[in-house]
Amino acid sequence: MVSEPAHGAPAPASRHWSETAERGNATWVAIGTFLATRLGRPFSMRALYLVAAYFFLSAPSARRHARAYLRRVLPREPRTRDVFRQVYAFATTILDRLYLSQERYELFEISSEGEALMDEPIARGSGAFLLGAHLGSFEMVGALGRQRRGLKVAMAMYRHHASRLTALFQAGKPGTAPEIIPLGQLDAMLRVRDCLEQGKFVGMLADRTLGEAPAYPVSFLGSATLFPLGPMRLAAALRRPVYFMTALVRGGNRYHVVLRQVADFSQPSPRGRDAAVREALERYARVLEECCRSDPYNWFNFYDFWQPAQLPDESVRGGHA
Image (tube, rainbow, N blue to C red; front, side):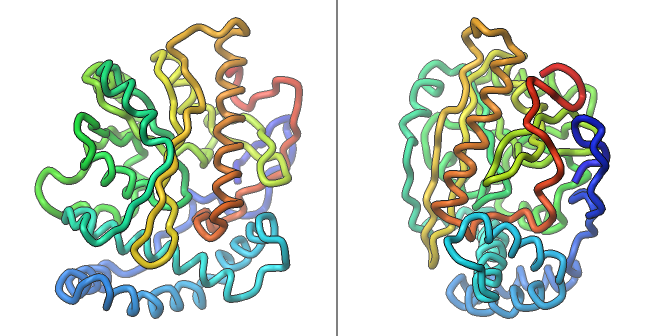
């Protein structure tokens, strides 16, 4: 998954996620968007079986990696229908981005746990980090936020890796798309800081490593793998609390939002910042693992997520945490 894992171990042969070409044709996506808008979600959910079947049949590598993941979370050997169910759940979240961009919140039944944790940072107006993953729907979390008074969310992401689908689906009602902070630009950290000082929550996906960016090996679903250090380091540098957040797809029109606090960098740690960052990353991975086990078909990393990585004494790829 990365070109040089910790301790100089040889890189895995599988292609890195960022090198995988986008799938789908822009014309067909536009046609599908038009039909989904005109014909409604019930019809679109039935038609989605055809879209999921196309992806399932035409992506043998994704099927292989999905099955390898499901072996870690299911109590039995995964069947073909289990892999298809995972692909269909992913397609569902993609479709629902369209309706969310149009503020069609009435289409969904959303339950939540831990939502009250937001009350304190909202009341203080101090801002915080929301760290998600390629698990469930992070966009649905934004929908919940837009319905909660006082909660404003900005998304920090690498724009050159943003999906063509996401760009299309953000073309909904004016003002509905969240503010985007492009990472990798010189002013990115300043923009993140400014958003936090305005009392906004800054959302980031924190489960995928990128190139030679600093990463730390963490035990996850039975094996050690590298998680990126960047999001936690940024939160520590800006002295903000960090929450894990996702919305799990539970069939039909049901989503379940999970919110857990994994760190509070507003107070100095007696063990130092490096240790606090590593401990926060381990807590993030534990909550992510818990969600994978409770809702296994919500995992949408269709590539070789695990790689050779030891669990060393304080070893970090890319320097100190």
